[in-house]
Structure formats: structure tokens, C-alpha cells
Length: 138
Image (cartoon, rainbow, N blue to C red; front, side, top):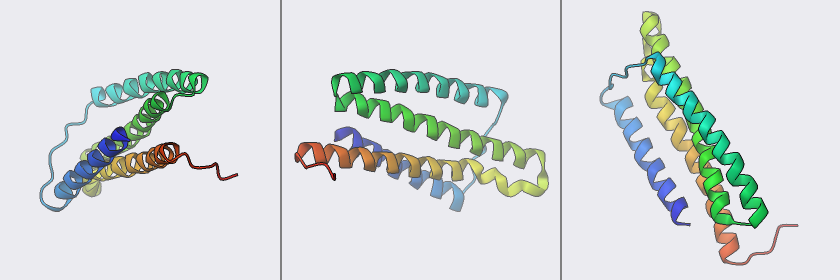
């Protein structure tokens, strides 16, 4: 449950910063080949971790391991959104007519906060159901 609260707090912070960047100032984002390489490597590592943790969670019926697996799955989706945002910023640099895409990083940050909030909500619901010993829907 603590992890859920921590993730939701992080979502609020990310969303606040993204809205601030969209409304008040545009931070310059330097997009390089390394930006994409780091994000893709992170996604590959997170996918591997998530698979192992998910299998282990099912084997031992552990909600803590399941929460960690879900955390890494969230990281994968968040990284994919970040890559789209970086690509938008790069396109805005290459094509001056598409300068509005320079806000892609802040928009991607809002997307990340939505993904993390959705996953956190699911995790929190399952945790509360387990703590309250609720019966399955079926």
C-alpha cells in the first residue's frame, strides 16, 4: 500500500512539473542518440526483471513481488512514452514548422503520470481488497 501512495505522489509531482513547463517556460531538452539508447536499454532490463518477478510472485503467491513486477511493467510503458516525447522534440528541432513538438517532453511527462496513476490505482485496489479480505467478484 505504501508503494501505491508513493507512486501516486510521484504522479502528482510529475504532472505539476509538466504543466508548469507547458504554461510558464519551456526547458530546453537535448535529445541525442544516447537518449534513445539509454531508454531502450532501460526498457529491456525492466522487461527481464518484470518477467522474473511475475513468475516468482505467482509461484509463491506474493503480493510484494507482484507489486514490484507491476512497477517494472509501469517503467516499460513510461519509457515508451518518454521515447515518443523525445522523438517529438527531435522532430520539432529538425522541422521548424513543427516547433510545437518541442513541448513533446512535457506532454510525455503528463502521459507518464497518467500511466503510473492508472497502474497505481489498480495495485492499490488489489491491496485494499486483500487487506479487507474481500471475496472475488465471481
